Image 1: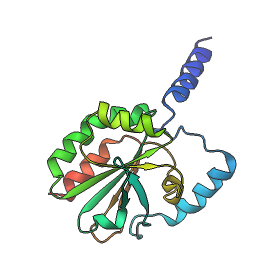
Image 2 (image 1 turned 90 degrees about the horizontal axis):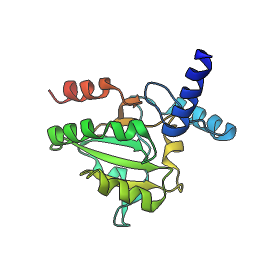
Image 3 (image 1 turned 60 degrees about the vertical axis):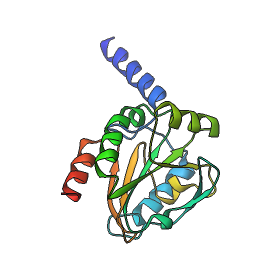
Image 4 (image 1 turned 180 degrees about the vertical axis):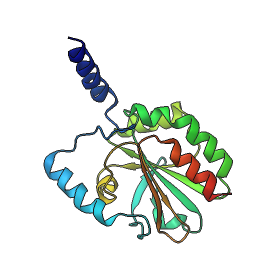
Amino acid sequence: MKRMKVNLWMALAVATWGCAGSMKAYAWPVAEKQAVEVVSQSIAEGQMAPDFTLKDLQGNDLALSSLRGKYVVLDFWGSWCGWCIKGIPDMKKYYDKYKDRMEILGIDCRDTEAKWKAAVEKYALPWLHVRNAGNPDVSKLYGVPGYPTKIVVDPQGKIAKIVVGEDPAFYTYLDELFK
């Protein structure tokens, strides 16, 4: 009986949060999962980050390549993701600490436009934001296996670090990078 309660709690937690914390909980449909697995093999530290252009909060085009010259943290997140929301205070702290040397580009995934904009306002997120509406689907382009996923792109456009889940190692990496 105790095991059934634990399993039920875990199922409820995954259904509620639906994102990666210390585990990859988002279940991709089979065809999409296979596509993500193929792409994720070519998305690796040291490789060039694929360029993309998405709409920002004001409806303007924002291209990743326009941010060259600074480190950029691609933050794949959603308002529905409990671990994404849980990580906001640390993201704000590190943005304030290093905003002169890096930019954060929040990439909203699987939200409606209204929910995305409301979440950015509710949590007072001060960095750049774009909406991944699916054309192109940047989470597939980058082979994102779960949420949140943070990908650090260096000033030359190469992938420097990939962190899946809300992991303190990400913040340790930033401290080491910007010593």
